[in-house]
Length: 193
Ligand SMILES: N[C@@H](CCC(=O)N[C@@H](CS)C(=O)NCC(=O)O)C(=O)O
Image (cartoon, rainbow, N blue to C red):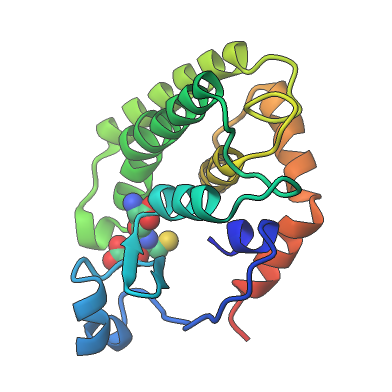
């Protein structure tokens, strides 16, 4: 979320919250997100949860001719939505989320070695298929950086954390994104002091 805000050069205020702490039980936060999850975006009366929705909302609302995070043409927007759905469902929900729960937090969600093994294999199959679909890059949508690159890097970072190897194309893609000044600024902004 920081990354999208920084790419779009938007002024914003951060309220730092730590998950799974008393801060999440705070009534004000519960009224904003009863699911007790971050990130949450508040823009005027609009309260939005879910990273994919937040990044896409910011992209739709604040893109300009100079800084555009979602394409204008119908077919390119369809490609954006395709990547968005693939990243959230195939890479995150059915693969990495399983690892985050059962390898990362077994005390809460229980051990499930077979499910984790299957999730690792599934991630590999999906990311290899995605590499065949990516084209010449340098971004998911070709020549133009967009919100789906932000979301893809978030899942590729999780993959790296769980030791999942990436196809060479995505290794190069991730390295070049991590080198982007706006990415570095976002990490800085998201690091607790
Ligand atoms: N699908 C949500 C997932 C959000 C999520 O799981 N956030 C983590 C922090 S990165 C969290 O709030 N975890 C707290 C918990 O699971 O109790 C999104 O993409 O925004």
